[in-house]
Image (cartoon, rainbow over all chains, first blue to last red; front, side, top):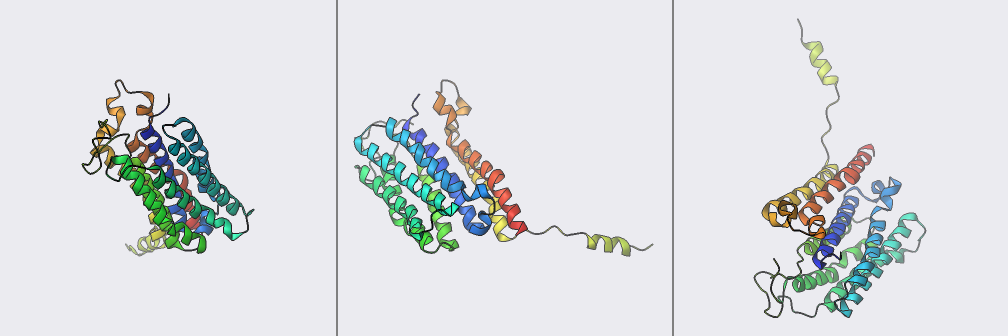
Length: 194
Length: 91
């Protein structure tokens, strides 16, 4: 009954797509109007926290290598930390502005986890390429959540942050268990499925 | 017979307001997402396993990326974007 790995990636891609759309909508209308309805104030932080919770079963059941387990565990933790910090900030229970740096921290840790747990080169197969691409997107893209933390009212930083999340969802949708990337597939990778 | 009164009555009716850029962006975000999912389903119909469901397992029928994109766009539009546009207009 366990889903294939690519299906898990696609489900998380859908979660990230929705998260990106929520953030984009917030960036478009501004924080004041976004927070006008109580449920909306907590929408994306709780969604992010929930995705972190759902990452734990992924860590538990996809045990093909220790480094994968560690990476999934790291994602679960930082997503929950970032979601919880944003929930606290939205509620007003967290007053210290330093909590705003929880999301850029999650970005950086997630990016490093992507890069460190992929041991094959970029063009080994599609998932290797995507791991490198996702990792560098997060590591370089950390400037946007960082900018958003430093300048919370900046539409540009908020919009770019949302765009990076949407881009990540597109990359995750491209994932396949074993497939070539731009015509490249290492002979060591095996036979492509589809 | 004069048409003056008819003309003035038409002019006194409220004109439909044109959407400004921000509500317009919100209004198109969900449909654009769904359209991209639809385009994906057309370009890669083999990704929609419901079209060839024989012998497919649960996960292949439950998780179909192009349909998930379409659903995400629709859900966002109806449950998030529309109430948000209302709030923006009331502002």
